[in-house]
Length: 68
Image (cartoon, one colour):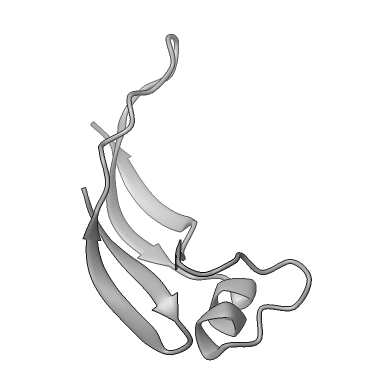
């Protein structure tokens, strides 16, 4: 799947990640939109604080999806 990797503050690079398989008894979903939370925005700006991910990182975990 396509991704945007934050390599350094204010720098996004296109990336590709393998599509994860859902565990048994879980349904796959098709992501329609994705957004970054406040911590992700701070990380993108170069101010991750204690909770922010180390760069490089794929930011964004707030999604809108449909059952696949």
